[in-house]
Image 1 (cartoon, rainbow, N blue to C red):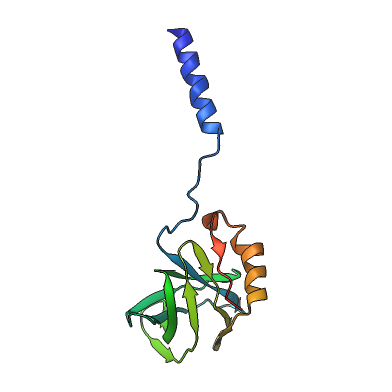
Image 2 (tube, rainbow, N blue to C red; image 1 turned 180 degrees about the horizontal axis):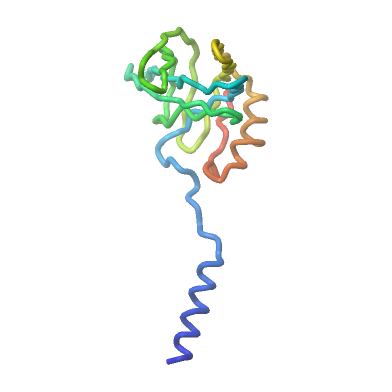
Length: 169
């Protein structure tokens, strides 16, 4: 009986010490849309707004609303997962975290999504001071997207197995 317990303990320890096999990517039928981010908070204040984007599938006309929270000192912000296809931005809403206000803004641009790939179409910059807030969203170049993906996103275990979707030249 004692030998059986020792054998069971050895097998259990061996199983626990091996690395589990991870899925090749987290969304088998979806792609992931992420923005590069520069979020700066100055003084005795905190971020008040997250972003809500409406995107339209160019082929079907179906619209999707995706909330993108922003976090101070993080170099990227996750907009969400979408089915593969071509999309265009329809509108941007800045939504107060306490639910007491929404600001509407125009946003332009198109991007592609493929299953198992990360798309980095935009760069969001937010500067928050005690009484002011400045937010700007611009296009992100493919070189900057690749640097961000390799240095910050791919090093996060959450995104292990994902690949960067490079735009066609």
